[in-house]
Image (cartoon, rainbow, N blue to C red; front, side, top):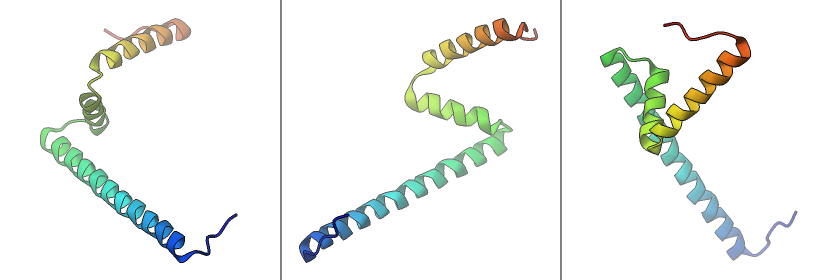
Length: 88
C-alpha cells in the first residue's frame, strides 16, 4: 500500500473523503424522505407498502411494459414448473 507523504496529495485525498461523505449524507436524507413519503401515503390510503414501493420504482424507471412482460414470464414458468394455475 502506498501512503502519500506529500501534504498536498494527502489534502486531496481528505477532500475526496469529505466530498464522498457529503454525498452519502444527502443519499441518506433522500432515502429517509422516500421512506417517510411511502409511510404517509400508504397509511392515508391503506395501500400495501411493498406494492406502492414497486409502483414508485416502475414509475421512476418508466418500465411498466417490461414489468408486465416479466411478470407474465414468471407466471408462465411458475405454473408450468409447479403444475398450478392462478386462482380466478
